[in-house]
Length: 332
Image 1: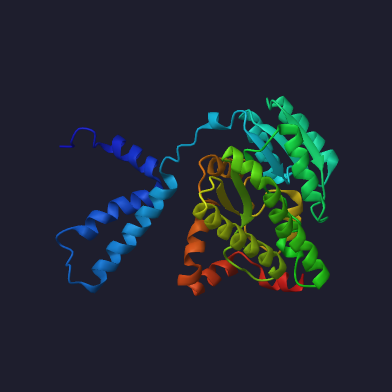
Image 2: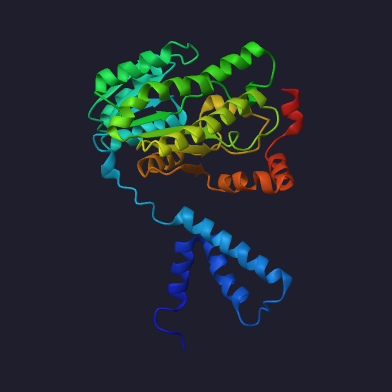
């Protein structure tokens, strides 16, 4: 006889709520810890540690993150790279949540379209400034514009992208210098200029990066260098702010391929990986920034790759080869 609440329907609901990984972990743990498992078995302790670690990782991802959409109503947000892809979807999510926005990107015509859509979605204030982050003097102009229009900042969301990895093989020092200016130095400049206002508001820095920040891959060395630099700079800055009791959160976001036409074209025939859906990836970024999470991984399996970087380099290399057409990349 089935106990009350433990029938097939209940088990189905439990499985749906936990997800496949959580269900397998929950089912296998009692077997491992049962009296039949011999504590002197050399593999017993390893099984317990492995399953406990997988369970902790699972719950850290799927547990309630206490995201409160109302906390973003009236928030003052400076968003870069807002004209397409994940940046465009970020702008639309913030607009629906009632945030005040300053949007910037390279192309003015695309920005005007995004601004119009944000206004339709209910954003109380939306301003834009077209800017090319390849110019070292531009970040100061962008931050000053945002401060003048919004009176301060609660969020600085750094999302702009200078080039796709497939187009950044080492061809010249000049090209690498340009890429580092757009994908790293401008991030540092914008952060330095906005930090006093974020300190006053106890705000948040949200840095949209990629898997190539914590995990290198082939045929993208200048791009990987810029993303590694972001990872190191903002990781160090987080510690500096912490020891100085400065209440500014830093959220590093590791995303998959950008869901935009230019990225798809740059990777055509080179990578077998699918682009991350823009709306879902953008929502993951916003939730992470609003809850002041130290890191966001979308899709979530990227966190596993980052954890395995130093522990199991060969499986990681094997995984990368599964998603990379090596012959096409070498010929690009």
